[in-house]
Length: 365
Image (cartoon, rainbow, N blue to C red; front, side, top):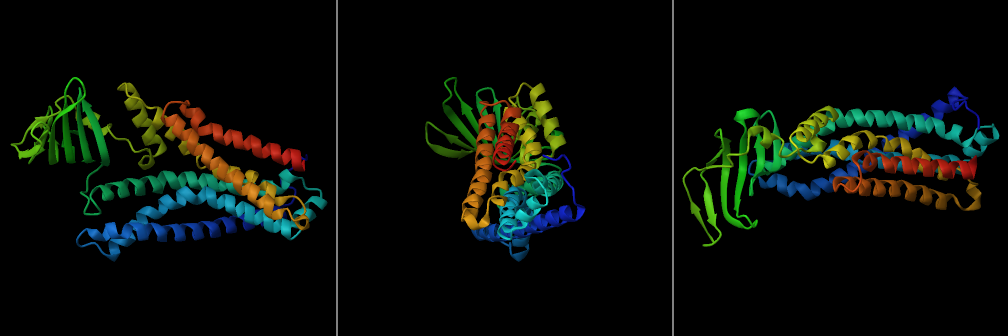
C-alpha cells in the first residue's frame, strides 16, 4: 500500500466535498423528521401550562434540536458514507480510481479526513451548545414547562442521604447557603430500612444546620393520613455542598466541569465510575463519526453489476449500527462498574476500528 494517502488534490477535494454535502443533507433530513415527531409527543405537555403558546413551542425546539443533532450526527455520517460510496461504485468511479493506481485506503482517506473534521466540530458543539441546552431543558421540564427562576445553577431530581433517612428534591437551585429546594420529600426510616414517616413540602431553604421546610405536610404511615404541620427542620447532616453534588448531570456539564465534579465527589468518598465513563465518552463519542467511513467502506468495492451492491450496503449499515449497540452496552456496563471507565468508553471504538481495518485489508488490499 502506498504511503501517500492524498496523491491528487483535485480528487481529494471532490471526494471530501461530496461526502460533507451528503452528511449535511442526511443530518437535516433526520433532525427535521425526528424533531417533528418529538414535538408532536411533547406539545401537549408544553401547552398544558397556562399561558404557553407558539413562543414556548419554539423555545422547546431551540432546546431540543441541539440534542438531536448531537445524537444523530454519527448516524448521519454512517448513512452518508454508504450513500456516497455506493453511488461511486454504481457509477464506476471506484473502478476508475483503482485503475489509476489508488489503493482502498487512498480512496477512503479524504472521507476519513472529512469525518475527523466532523468529529472535532461535534466535540466543540457538544461542549459549547448541547450542554447548555440540556441543562436549560431539564430545568424547564422540572417546572412542568412553566417559568424558571433565574438561578445561577439548576439541578433536577436530587436524592440525598442523612443516615438512614432520604431527602429528595424535584429541583435544586442556587449555590452556597442561598440554595433552595422545590418539590421536597423527606423519608424517615427505621434501622431496618422501613419508611416510618414521610414529609412533603413545596420548598425548603438551608437553615444551618438542616433544611427548613415551607408549609410541610406529614404523611403518617401507621395512620395512613396526611396532616399539615408547622415548619420543621430536617436533614441536619446534609450541607449545601453535599446537596450541590447530590445530582450531577453529565450531559449538562462540559468536559472540564464534569472533571471537577468527579474530583470533588472522589474526595468526598463517593462512587464516580458512572461519571468517569461519561467523561471518557465525551471524547470517544464524537470520534464515532471518524469510524463510520471505515465501517461503511464495504459498500465502495466489488463490481456493481455483480448484483452484490445492495448486500454490501446492508452489511456496511449493519456494521455501523452494531457499533452503536455495542457502544451503548459497554457504557451501561461501565455505569454498573462491570467495566473500568476507560475500557467502557474506548473498547467499542478500538474493536470496530480493528474490524473495519481487517475487512478492508483482507478484501481490498
